Image (tube, rainbow, N blue to C red; front, side):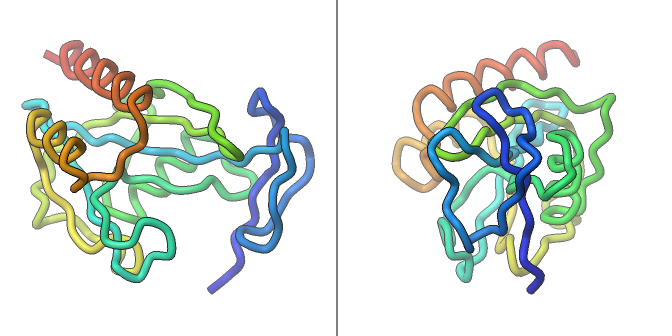
Length: 174
């Protein structure tokens, strides 16, 4: 496996000109790397979620949002577009995608994207080393999975904002 190089960002998300290799060094306080999540919505308001591979070091076997870290030189949209295509085989374009919000975490800046697809789950191209399964679910089912621990808990602020943004996004399409 090729080592993944990340750009180091400042607290405002601006590149510092420095890079780091994933897993080889720790970011110092005030240094961040860019992470993206992509929420795929169907025309009827369902969410496409994925179960992470059991061999993943972080969150193995958990249901979670599609996403990952931006590699050196990528902007947020490019990283989201790449991750979505690599993990699920879905192509995202700037016309159907919306950057919903940004959250600063301990050593990452997380950009959350929303896009649409109506591709049936059994027609997705799953990246085996990353994704074990995928399915379309209703908002009610996603809330239930979060509450009972079946879906990775990204935190109340994250989910409050995500549900508001995805509801508005689908509402604007209708």
